[in-house]
Structure formats: structure tokens, C-alpha cells
Image 1 (cartoon, rainbow over the protein chains, first blue to last red):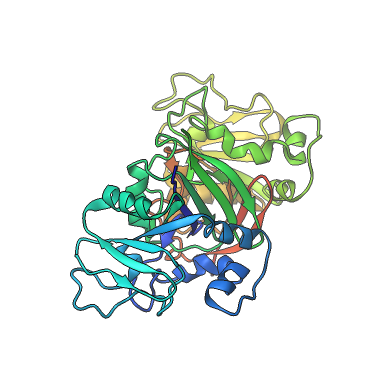
Image 2 (spheres, one colour):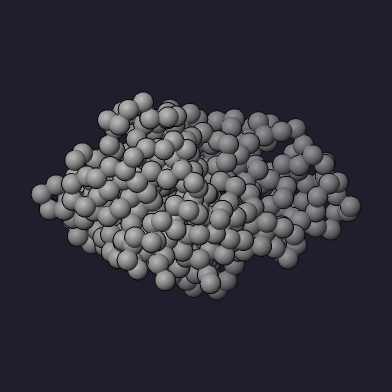
Amino acid sequence: MSKLRVHTFSISLDGYGAGPHQDQDNPLGVGGLGLHKWLWGTRTIGKLFGDGSGATGVDDDFAARGFSNIGAWILGRNMFGPIRGSWPNEQWKGWWGDNPPYHTPVFILTHHPRPSITMEGDTTFHFVTDGIHECLKRAQAVAHGKDVRLGGGVATIQQYLRAGLIDEMHVVVSPVLLGSGEHLFNGIDLLKQGYQCSEHTSTPNATHILITKQK
Amino acid sequence: MSKLRVHTFSISLDGYGAGPHQDQDNPLGVGGLGLHKWLWGTRTIGKLFGDGSGATGVDDDFAARGFSNIGAWILGRNMFGPIRGSWPNEQWKGWWGDNPPYHTPVFILTHHPRPSITMEGDTTFHFVTDGIHECLKRAQAVAHGKDVRLGGGVATIQQYLRAGLIDEMHVVVSPVLLGSGEHLFNGIDLLKQGYQCSEHTSTPNATHILITKQK
């Protein structure tokens, strides 16, 4: 059974998954990049974006898990880019350059239709306008039995959490304060939704938590 | 200068400092005792409540810091007991038996006056009805230059945070979910209040964070 999984989703000590004032210069809001400091030095990220170098160890193990057995991705529209409202043209193709780090079909939730985009490295962006359930169905249909990774952001994860559709979530608490922004768990009763903390590991850089839905 | 310090204040992964439905059987709300699992095995707690045995190490070091150079305590009324509204009589003398673990004057914020209570072991409970500023002033006046420890609970800490009066806060993120209850940082912009994360250490049991106010 294909699972819906969230990985390497970093939040601040005060619970924010993104800082305030998101725009093209601050895709994760002011201060938001600090959430992912633990991730950038890992070998997994070095392989995806750099020369393959980087640290191994617990942080890297968690980063690597997020790419294991993934057949498709789902992203909220604000994770794809800074443009809000209808697409002014078809120039914006994501934050990641010509060869994005997905290498699978990627389904982007939006209210505004747009033709699919084929990128280098087997990444295809599809734009889905008929809601989270249909989006998951489409992603699972092309995942060839593998799991679907939900990339975020906060609003998209909250929608899927409320609908009870996320099977597991790797959340990382980073040692930063954001003060305001998008709060990941606000207004969501994870216990009532059937989630439990099934794993808890800390490194000098961050605290890794695995939250899984009990069947 | 006498500081106002919070120590060993434990919150869940979803940010709650107490679970829902607090009463005499569940002083920290349903599931709330799980927040302090990291603390109960430490030597510091063994000395306060037991035969002096218990584990040393990072968790214990943090627990011990909370009792170092403390000349007075402040508690919210709900930390003192489960009774709400006016005091029906003077029988309730706290959760802690005849010899409470404070051994200093303890100032309890309440809207309902009550005579002070002298306990064994140099603990005296004073009931303060004229607000958080006056309460801090009275605590500092008897602390003999030592610091004042603010015990909690969540609502009391939030009042002192909003007033900018807390100098440092040791917060512990425990690997449990509570789902609902009293959220420690909800609606408080710690960055705007001038706080920064100045220390971050993890153990297999919990993540310790020190948040300090920048002068």
C-alpha cells in the first residue's frame, strides 16, 4: 500500500515551519532558512545539489530516508514559487533550476490551472486544481507502488493532516526561534487524529521526530 | 541584579505545557506527566523527593541548575492546587506534602486573598493578589540578591513573557504528543520580545533549550 510521507520538515523551537514575510528573497520567510541548517551539511544534500560531499551520520540518515522508495511528490503551490494568484505566464519553473531534485512526477496543488512542465532528470511538474484527495490519487497512480512524499508547506500539510491522510511525518525541531510565521501544528489535535511519536533522536544540530498514524 | 528564571519547563512536541482536563488526579492534564519523564530519574529529583539516588548526566545537570542561586519562587495559583475560585477553607497546602521542595519563600499569584502558610524546611507560601509586577517585586525583596524562579504554569509564564520580565527560560521538549491543552508560546512573538536561543543540548530523553533575553 502506497503511503503518504512527510520528511525533513523543520520547525522552530516555537513551532513555526516558515517565518513571516515570505517572498522570492525569503522563500521560507524571514529567518526560515535557519530551520534547515542541520540539513545543508549532509551528504544527501551534497549529492542532490553539490559535488556529493557532506557529512554522514544521524542527520544524513534522516535526510536520506526521505528519498527512499518515493515514486511521486506533492507540493503546495507556495513551495513551488513566490507567485500568488493566477499564473502571469509560464516562465516560473520552480526554485530549483533546470534539473530539480525530485526525479519523479511532482503534483502541485493550486487553484489556477497550468500545463504540465517536463524538466531534466525525470522531474515533471503537474498542476492539480481539484483538491488534495484527487491530487493524492493521481500521485499514487503514477508512483508504481512506491510511496508519495508530501513536501509541504505548512498549509498543505495541515490540510492533509486534518483529512487523516498522512501516514508518517519526520519533523525536525531546529534550535532557532522564529517568533511568528506559519505554525505547523496549530489547531490540529494530533492525538485525536491518531498520531503517536514513534521515534525521537537528537544530534547536536537538531531533534528528529517521527510521528506515525496508528492503524 | 536578581534575575527572573524559568527552569525545567517541559513542553510536548506539539508545544503544550500541560494536557487537557486538569484536575486533582491530573495536575498537568491528561498525558501531562509524560512531559517530565526525563526529569524523574535524575539525581536532583531523587535528592528532593526520594533517597538521593538517581542518574547524573546532562538531564540532571539541567535539573540541578534550576535550584542554583534561587532565593524565592513565583507560582501561578493553578500550580499550587486544583481549587479554582475563592478558597473554601485553608486545608489545601499544595501538592507536595508537609515539606515542599522549595525551601524559600514562594509567592502564589491569585485573585483570592489568603493568609501565608509556613511549611517545614523553610518554605513559606504567600498569596499575592495585586498582579505580576508586585509579585516579582516582593519575591526579589526577600531573595537576598539571589534570583527568582518562576515555576509556571503556562498562563503565568505567558503573562511574564508578555511583560518582558523573564531573563532566561530553560525549556525542555519531550518526545510526547499531547494534542491539546495549554500551548506555551501561542500568540507570543519571542523574537520581538528580544529572546534568542542561547543553548541547545539533546539527550536520549529530551531536548534542552535555553532562551535568554538580549539586553
